[in-house]
Length: 195
Image (cartoon, rainbow, N blue to C red; front, side, top):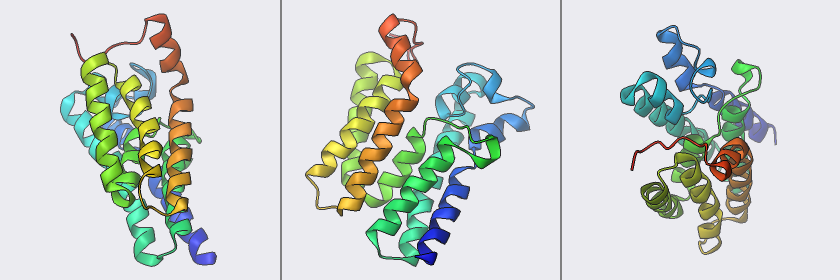
């Protein structure tokens, strides 16, 4: 149990690193005061450009993947690995370095799932791309893809710990997109891609 707690603590600390905030600080910009005020790749792209947005997406995805990968290197217990997935995700949402505030966790959740549920994750990515193509809303695409992942996991032979982790991450992603959902309903949500 002590090993599991150590792994979870490390995963949380890793998840707390915000690549978007770090890239913005290099340019003397506080990302939380611009655009949507979110620290994720979409807002970074709007404020700092496509290259910074791509680096943020890559960094946030890799920390999610690394969090569960390192857990799997130390332990083969699915509960411990799933716990690391949740904790690295929590770190992004409630960063110890940002006064326990953070982003919406889509990229970090993607990294977590890529390592432990690669086939289901590719299916969710396809859902994201299709929804984005139809709607032009990154937020809506993220929400629908997040919901699709635990549904896909039902049909996979993954450990139940992974399925519950996936469901928990999906619920949190939807909750973190509350304001986006409200803006989509009222027609004020900005589209990332122009029709």
